[in-house]
Length: 150
Image (cartoon, rainbow, N blue to C red; front, side, top):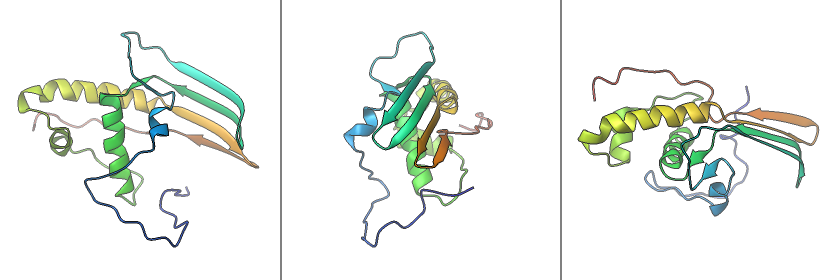
């Protein structure tokens, strides 16, 4: 498996802080993030023949909320960018601290986190660029752990 996030593409120096990460506005314009999430869990499928240099673009996903789901996505993205490994553990205490969750609300957040991760597991993107076809997932595996130590 080839890592695509850890390549050096330029000789420019990049400065970053552990607690700060910028996003282009376009990431929130992705169709997977929706500002209104109705109660119905309906899978969305998009097919685009050609988009700029990309061909045969396919996306399958359950819509993610701009609120909580995006926060989980952001947390996972931060963890991935800081790691050279393909897998990592979400420490629930660190997650709750990152999101400033009051201890009395932890149980509700754990349930929301499980649903959010389930929806992210189902995300699928396929596209062709040049002679290659790429197949991508946001997450490929989520392993449950004990929540009793919170």
